[in-house]
Image (cartoon, rainbow, N blue to C red; front, side, top):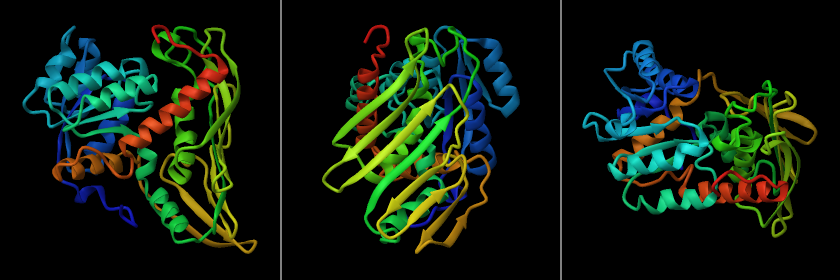
Length: 337
C-alpha cells in the first residue's frame, strides 16, 4: 500500500461502461474524464431519454437503452470495466451481470443490501476484479492519516469517530426512504463513518446501535458503537437524515490526535495535534475525488489482481456485517430478505 497518494493520471487507461444514468454516475464521469486517462465508453439506461442525455453531457460514444440495456452494456466488447451506479437494492444483480461477462466491476456503496448478497457477488468472482466504490479510502488525506497512524504519530489509537448527517425532504417513494430500494440513512450515509472507523481499526468485536425509524420502516438515523476490547479502542459512527451534522472525523491516540476537516469523505485537510498544540496541518488540493479510486481499479486490473489492498473484499464483507447488525438491532428489514 503506497505511503503517499499517486497521481490518477499515472494509472493506465480503462474504457468504462456505466450502469445507471443518475446523479452519482454524473460525478463518476466528471472524475474519470477530467482527471484520469480513462474514458466512459458506454452508458446503460433502461430510460432511453436519460441515457441519451448522459451520453450528450459526457460525449459517451455508445448508449444501451431499453429492457436489456444492462445486459448489452456488459457484453459490449469496447467496455473494459463496469461501474454500477444503480440503487442499493439492484447492486447484487447488476454486479453479477458484469462478473458473468468477465468484466472488472466497481460497485457503488453500499455494496449490496446485506452481507449475504455481498458474499454471493464475491463468490461469483474468484478470477474477476471486484471492488466497492468507497472512494474516501483512496483520497490523499486518508493515505496520509493511515501513514501517521502506522508511524505511531498518535500512539496507541483509543478512539475513532466520524459523522454524516443530511436532511433530505421526506418522500416515502424516494430511494432514501423506500424499503424496496434498501433506503435509510445507514446504507446511504452511514456507510461512510462506519468505513472510516473500519479503515483505522478494522472489524469490531461487538456492535451496539441506537436509532430512529422513518414511517416507511427504514432507519432515519443511528449512532453506532464499534468495540475493540483487545486494543481498548472504540469507534463511533453517526448517520442521520434528520439534521445536517458537522461531517468531521477524528483519530485519537495516547500521544496525539488527527482531526479531519469538514466533509472528511471528500478531498480535505487534516491536523495532527500533539502535546496540546497543532503540530502539523496537511492538505491536498484535489477536485471531485473519485479519480483516485478509478485509478486504483485501473492499476489493479492491469496487474491482474482481483481486489484492492486499500478496499479489499474482506473489508466490504466486514463493514456489511456491521451494517446488518445495526439494522438487526434497529429492526429494519428489507422486503425479500
